Image (cartoon, rainbow, N blue to C red; front, side, top):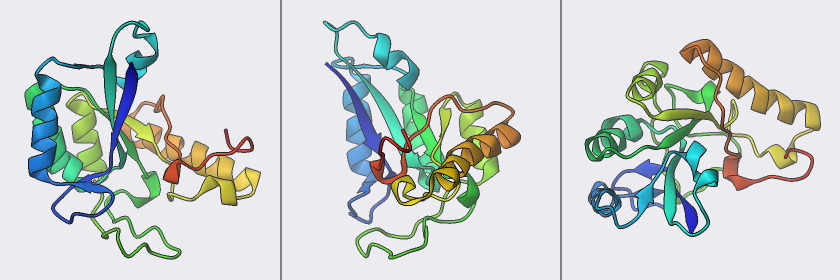
Length: 176
């Protein structure tokens, strides 16, 4: 079995996108116990079919990844990929449009924090420039969102991200 454990925020809000510090700490302890193999996202497809492995991902690039999750993961020797919204770095997740009342507005990592977690060994992936639902955009604008996010990361970190996560998990043949 291969799987991806996808997180967003490590905080105490109890929201649909959050896991508490205590709960995340329990997850890390379990994952570090060796009962399941944790691999970098890039390595997951090459895990043999008869082996079990998971990869860890974090969407949006919340500041609490740098302050809470990254230190726990680093201490346990666990890899992770963080998908950042390049145009919102250093701001918050008030993406615009109709805000979901169950989702708290939380700070996102600054470029310095993103660079720091990248230097610590965590992979940085692209998650568009503005967290737009790509399925609702004209093709040219969707391409600009995807390529622009990767361009911004390359300009700031000196290397182009190799992985991309669709905001809201929303994809279609037009944006795939």
